[in-house]
Image (cartoon, rainbow, N blue to C red; front, top):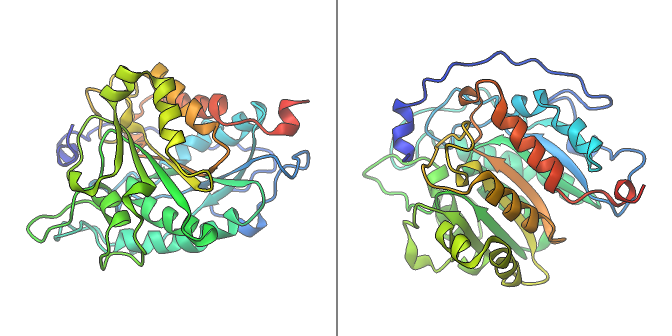
Length: 336
């Protein structure tokens, strides 16, 4: 399904959400990144996943789903990660102003709302990234957040970063004055071009890898390394993952961006922009598991989950289980 078609197909019923309390976990929005502490039994060198909700839909087409991170908490994300041997803490939600605009004025829908959130992320995330062993895990966001998260990671790594962009689309449309595009559909274009839309500096095309797409690039001249769904199946998921990781410089800090529309819509019903073709759940689990094992991973974000589509909450439980199974375990827990 193309992004503009979502407006006519998003009539799913909302389901009430209830928050199960998690021992020692802060309530959403109640902590700052600097106050988040790893569990007491965590070794200093063990990864700690700092879960941060980003209640944003201004970068996409359809407002109203801004509290999607809550569904992950209702599915006991932090508790299930810790039970599975992964150190995890809840850092609440990124405080986002209530006055963000929603409009369809070209070239970027709801501008400057996406930019406001990118700047907030670039202020908040370095506090987490500078803490030894802490890896941000963003939930509830749309794809446009990658601009802010890449900027934050660049700030703490002197721009020595690489973006693994796992998505059913390439999201590299160039903004034009004749039509209103979502910031999400232009996210990679923003990342790799000088423009007035963000502070930059832009990443080189060699610092981005497209993975798993079925909708081809809208700016193919950029020369970004690309592995389509067809490539994954032709080469094999394991060999493809090895080739993708081998092409990234050894010193690079990796930002793993996962848009769940890389999965086929029949396998995961809560996709914000579902695709008929996509990775099966088993293919996706294998790919994500292989990529997440790379020790260069410094930041993870899961985007485009739509709680309004997830009647019965089956999709969010599937996503939480994937994270519990595939995130690298903490050393102290793995050996206990």
